[in-house]
Image 1 (cartoon, rainbow, N blue to C red):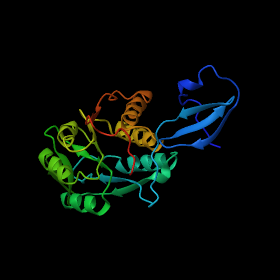
Image 2: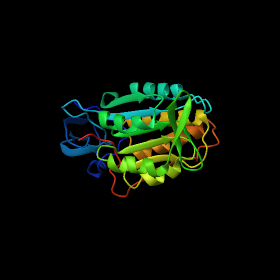
Image 3: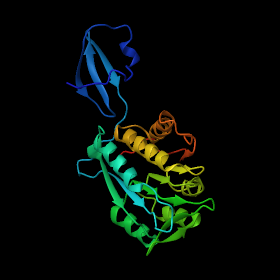
Length: 250
């Protein structure tokens, strides 16, 4: 027997019926069929990602950089929060979180080739000129331009469905990357370190419960409001018109 969420919408063919519902057949697209008082009905639940039989999962590549020459960020706490939220999510077996630290420009192609992620997340510093700061070794930083990031995702776009740039002023890069990737999250202005953590935790938690990218984004900004953070309007989501709203491995 299928277990249903009572908040999910019932098909209109069930209107006016009463009595117990016997659900006995689960169809595709999270649709469950059943019988009520001898009448055939269907119950349409929200879509949810399903891990393929070959064991592949939705791979999230988490790239972090906080060179000693830049202001300290709580990137480890952010990664911990996201790891915990995904662990507690309904669809946790569908996701694989891969974290890489002190990322240098030479690491970008290597990591994308090695892991072929569906989601790329960057945590670190950005500036108003449209650059992100990666590591250059020995505590130094290496700026990467918007043009370089856009070209990176142009040539590596086959698997990547979503890019999250959790860095100040990253909406500049998001606009360029959005020409090649279905969904891109950027920050319009500087964002508080704690706000970046709260947003990321709520965003990935929602994805872990089968929410669409738009729904996950809205839950992230709502979480900022619930915590009384004044920069709740800083995150921005760009989505291409023909993009699938759900992250589902096929």
